[in-house]
Length: 69
Image (cartoon, rainbow, N blue to C red; front, side, top):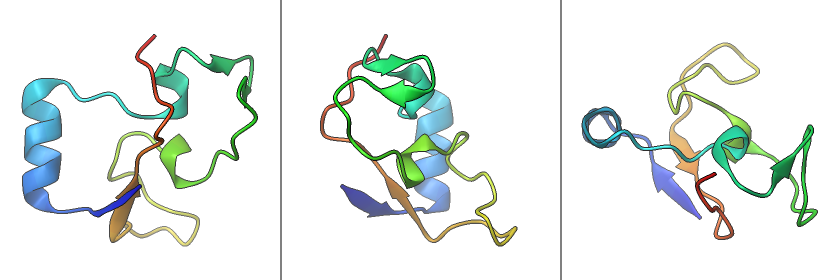
């Protein structure tokens, strides 16, 4: 699921300790998803980390299968 990456989202993520990246997920085993989902933008952490082009992304992706480890 994709959402706009806004300053409000970043502020609330910080305030509430949001964890959403693959490395925080119960299903992340070794360096891959145990459910075999492709790890794209939801692998990025923190949410506002630069993308491959070196700029802050416009949106953030959340995996529907995410379970906090």
